[in-house]
Image (cartoon, rainbow, N blue to C red; front, side, top):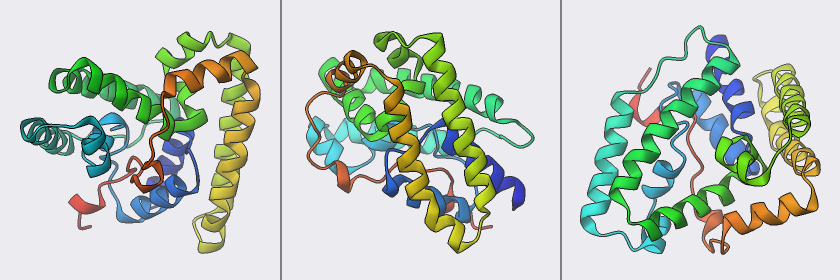
Length: 220
């Protein structure tokens, strides 16, 4: 259990939450075991009704998305014994493969829109994405500052422990971390990120955030 909690907290640093809702989801999934759904990003969004309706997915597309999700659950990676950087690398590779598969299911317009919605869900943590970092011209100095903010956040969350009192403090800690990360960006970069996020998704608050575990698929 201790190792599982360490992995889950590492995942939080790699994919810094966009808000309290994601923090709460992470807590629920952490207690459930597994580590299968994390890194789904766009795939996780495409399985949800509000996004499917926004993109006007056909029945055939929904079927293919469901099949892809099932395949990903069957082939969830093993993070046992890996450090945070190794976990980050594996999840980035997995997300890349997933997105390539998604691009074959959606048309160009749909793919562009789900990317925008994904960036809205990610919020400040989107800067961890290599494509976003390149588009925003994130400097090495900024990357280092962001890395320091995330590392400190990880340490603080780890020090909170896994009891109820500690978990209650996570949403506020993550909110503060997000604000600090945004503070590293220039006004121009913030504007660019907003442009990349596209038109606000009106049902954003209704979305379930990317999962950090496989509760629905594991009973132990």
